[in-house]
Image (cartoon, rainbow, N blue to C red; front, side, top):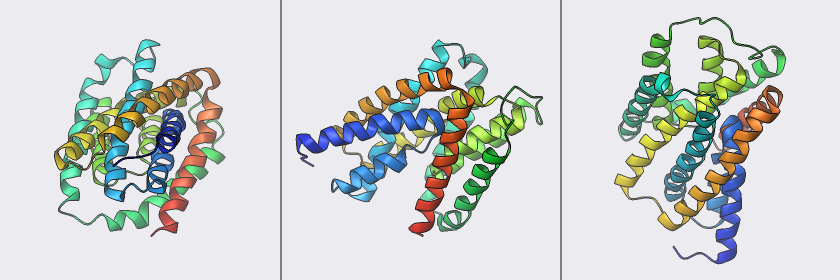
Length: 250
């Protein structure tokens, strides 16, 4: 597709904003996919191209969190692997199984998460004790959420963050930092599938990749400087936004 420079600039700016939001709470696709659809990009290509940008944003934020010591990548390698494998298998399952049933369940789960964040004022304030072992989380929860991202996707960042807080006792900043790394792995698996499928518009995707790298850096810095209250507020807004969008188009 040939797009005017003004449209490319609009998509770049949308990617910067999406990368920032994604680093805070996930849900950057709420911005980038509608932006691409508004510019006349077909839906399948918009979803595929969005994964390229999403990889840029989550990679950028993850590298910042690794650099600042919020994430130890050696401690995360098995969790990264199970998330990647789960997402890849989920993408394969998408071609064989109808995902419509998830569209009727996920909005209500996200609304419940938003209410939980809203009415649990001490949620994620400090690290707590594990409710399950890290191994159980790695091979069951991380794999399942990775599968969900490859199979369906909306709200993956929220699912990772709340599960890390609830099951492993992470504080909200630590959970958000680790969520970006896991979300990068699940995005990468989905991206590889879309590369094989051939649906990506590469010039738009690379532009939005750069935009989300910039936005991811901004968002990651906000996570560490503004802390839990900004994360909590953004997660509530994003979770409700995804739910409204899914219910409105169901």
